[in-house]
Length: 161
Image 1 (tube, rainbow, N blue to C red):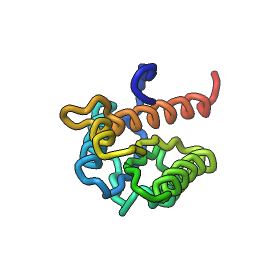
Image 2: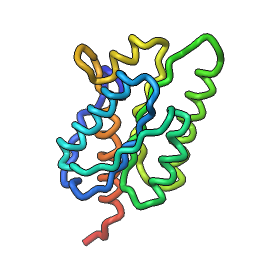
Image 3: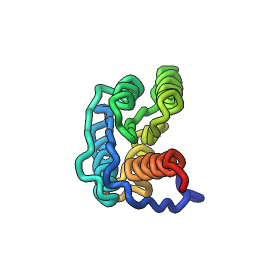
Image 4: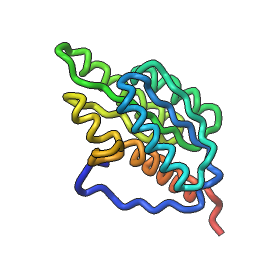
């Protein structure tokens, strides 16, 4: 979800969902904002005891997400930031993380909220981090998307009466 055209998601009755938030450690100020936004969104939804794990960087998000999905979590939220540098490293990391997280979600059936910022510079990342002065709160958005998807999956797996 990004800027204009983002849907208004309404999620109810999700307090019992088990949620893991996995956050990279690179770019501390941006990551602190993303984590704060994610935890605030979970609190707003009545999910007050998520599991929060910190990993070294965005590259490590998919493997930890897969393990947590296999441990019975209803939703995973992956938070990270990759800032473009002067080498192709940016492209490889962004592609690997994106494909890895998508694969975890599809293979396990557990929604993975994608809160990985892929930015040209730190200013863009700060503008999306949900901190004071930011225009977007991608940590909050990633939680809302993951929980809304988990609620949809729950509704289609419940027996019809």
